[in-house]
Picture (cartoon, rainbow, N blue to C red):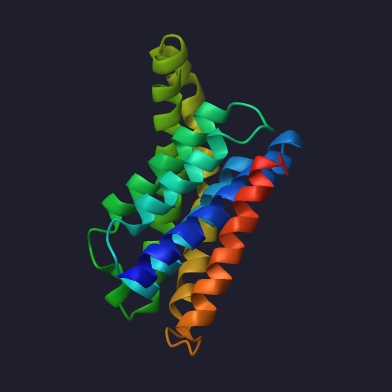
Length: 202
């Protein structure tokens, strides 16, 4: 249990750091930040579910990453980005109620990755388009409808990334020989670095 909690904090913190650094970089240059970061989020969540098989862990990771993104002093639309990250975690948990990781067929693995990647990106984006306006101003349905074809079309990229990534994740050996003392020490250092970097506005 303790290892799972540490892993949740570790992966959530690294995810948050990537959102604040790589995500901002891609967004500022219009390089498909949403697609790339949603795909990275899926990879992190799928890997930790495969490795630890702990329901709720990925929602916890998403909550940590969302908090880091919201309190990052650099970047725009902090609220909508934070909402998107947290929603991605909830969507993953909903999809992965089914124990997909037990499947052995490569075709099934590709399908799981494709469905997860597409849903995490598209539904996360749609939820953000609804929730953010309701918090800061007012939600207009016609704004969502006008953007819906673009959101659903762009989800194809996340679908392809998910379909490619998941079989590779499943091929990673679960066995590790890292001593507990080294594991906890290394995790603490990486978490501290991630949070300090975000607070510093990196």
